[in-house]
Image 1 (spheres, rainbow, N blue to C red):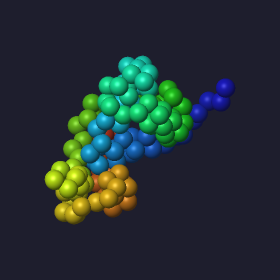
Image 2: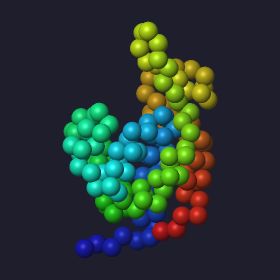
Image 3: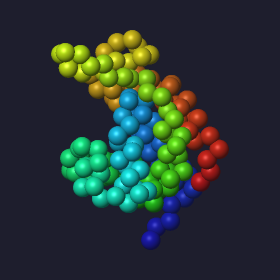
Image 4: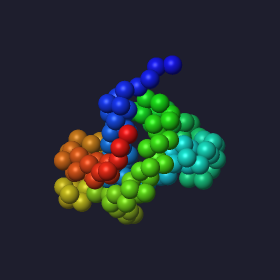
Amino acid sequence: MMIMSRDVVMERVQNLVRYFVCRRLSGDLIRLKAMYDYFVNNLSPSEIAGKYGIHKTVVSGMVRRVIELAGKEWIARWVLRILYRRLLGVDPIVVVVKSMRGSTYYCLICSKAVRDPFIHVRTKHKDIVGGVLRAVLDGVRV
C-alpha cells in the first residue's frame, strides 16, 4: 500500500474541488448531488439514476471521473462530506433560458449564449473559479 504525501493529497483535493466549483458555476447541481449520494449516502448508480432521471451509465461515468480526479475514493468521500454545503452555496454564473425553440445556456458574466457551460466557465472565467475555489477551501486542512 502506497502512502500519499500531504502535498499530493492537497493537490488531489484542489483538483476535485475545482471540478465541482466549475460544475456549480456552470449551473450543474445534479452532478454534485448525485456524487454526494454515491460517496456519502452510499446509493447505487441505479438508485441515483432513478432519483435524478439520468441513465446509470452516466452516473458510473461521473463516479469514474471523480475518482480519477481524487486519485482515491476516500479523498472524494472526504471532500464531499466536508465541503458539500459550501459547494451547494456557490451561485451559478451560467443559467438555462428556455424558450419555444429549446433551451439556451447564458453566461451572466459575458452576457452571451454559450454552447458548453462547463468548458466556458473552466476556460473563460479562471479568475472567478480561482476565487470561489479559495473561498470553498478556506480553513480546510488536510
